Amino acid sequence: MDGVIEKRIDQFNQLVMSQDIGKLPVGLFSGKMGLSIYFYHQARSTGDKLHKKFADTLLESALSQLNAKSLISLEDGLIGICLGLNYLVEKGFQTGNINYILSELDDKIYHAAWFEHMKGHSNSPESLQSIIEIGLYFSFRLQNSNLGNNNRCLFESTVIKAINNIEGSYSYSEIFSEPPTYSSNQHPLANYLYLLAIAYQLGFYNYKIDKVIDEIYPKLASFYPLLQSHRFQLQSSLRTLNAHLKRKSIDSYITRLEQGMDYRLMITTEFRNKNILLANGLCGMYLVNSLLLKCGKLPTSILIDRIVQSELWDDIAEDEVKLNATTGLFTGLAGVILIYQQLTSL
Image (cartoon, rainbow, N blue to C red):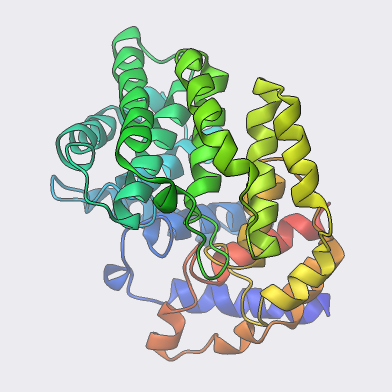
């Protein structure tokens, strides 16, 4: 079976590299930024200079298309671009001072955050997600020990504004809403708790975060997600948060969430054959919980089998429409391939 998958990966690479990249979107999830990450990894693992050249071309094309009107979202905007650039520098695919590289883009995200996204309250899931993404982005940037004092002050104030905005403007029904199916980045409660965890670790707003947790805990303690995948995502975020809070009540709640969890059953019943993507499938759940939150309880052998046997591979075709629908890092097979390669190298 390994040989079959390797042939499929090679077919995928060749077809993507034969595309007109001018027709590809820019962003991290389905566009050039995400695909550049994918091809840098392929170049490192195969030593193929064509993969490296294509990755460089994708990255240069993505950056050249950024302008004052660019969105700031994680999926298809500046936040995704910046996190992608930071990842490339951290992994050694690109060199340079990341604070200098991101300085202009940081300014654009900061301006949009304060004067557009956190200026008013729109009562929409999209608005809540945007503010969580803004808070998470600047929390990640604050983890950089070489960040200048002026930027550190500005970024801290933005994280504070995001947390206050969520606490003061959104109801429990909005924060505790459960998506109908698994999504790696659109589960409001799990992502909000992850934001609080990262911000708490930074240590500049802990007194307020403690109060936020005090206020939200009674509702949290009575909340029990319907889907096992959402329970798993919620407990993973809570573990990350409680590593710093160290509250016995939260430990007890995590234990309650874990009771009756059957990871194999969850994989086979809550994810259809083609649900293996990073955006809304098994690979996304593995990425978030095992790699990002370090809660590695998923049975990797089943994950590998589901990836190998998925009918999604059959959608790889020379037909341009089908190919575009299966290329993205999060919305296509590129991310699935990276997870498969990571799992099989363990």
